[in-house]
Length: 359
Image (cartoon, rainbow, N blue to C red; front, side, top):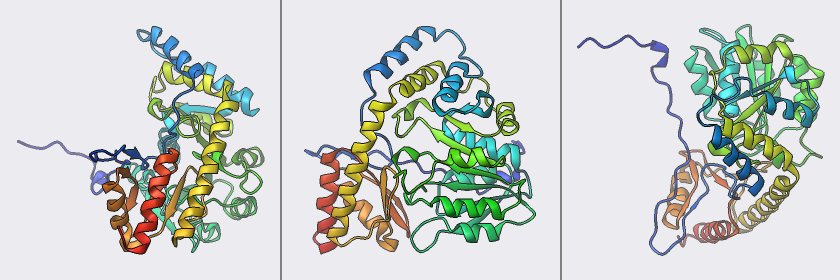
């Protein structure tokens, strides 16, 4: 049988590795700390909005997510024409790469960063321009600016960065924007922006308002706790947002997701109180890991990064035996979501034993 001819550019695309659920350990409550999920249950008001939307399952969703776009516009004081909604920030990320890059073009990003970046780059046949993180596991924006060449069409700044949780400040981002060509699309990927210290880490929308070549990506998956519904948004100047709408998957954002996202914005105060609790717990866990003798990166997200090198898989395996699933990157490090207090306590206890060689 003659096989069909597929695009050769798909050869060798790395598989996306999602965080795995914890394995069942007899007599132990298992916790998933591998996917950066918000461990809190949905708010009752959000659940009610989603349940009401179920009554319209026989209807197509609003193609343009008009009500959600208007709510985002009002909430963040940006023009509705500058907003594109998609299937999570990663869906919009794919669209951003599609509208800027093709075979032979360059997609610039730090590494290690979000796993989807090289995958989406290779799908369109573009070249990944990877720039190593600095010694503190942060974006090296000076090196990234130097890496820009005539082929570079889009630059991705993951702030805070996944999987390291580190973030860069206003001056570094401003200098990067001013040192690269004006026609280079700069995407500030802010999937975890609600977890940052706003006195230290800037709001990406400030750069969008000042520079026409800056787009900002955000999601309802993390702080808002809607990971299963797949809804995010991009704020960019109208020409860019309009191009995103041209390549969107028709009816990709379903009615339940739209309704739940609107309800989440309405209840943002309550949701951000939960975020404060997660940030407080992040600080507690990080301090305990330092006391145990480990060196976590300075996180501004809802997870913690341990650069453990060749011992990364060993650490993850020990967590697994204790009913905790974390996200290891072989030979590099381990990303650990900040979860329930009980899960975090167990992680701390194991880490102390592991450092002492008792695990």
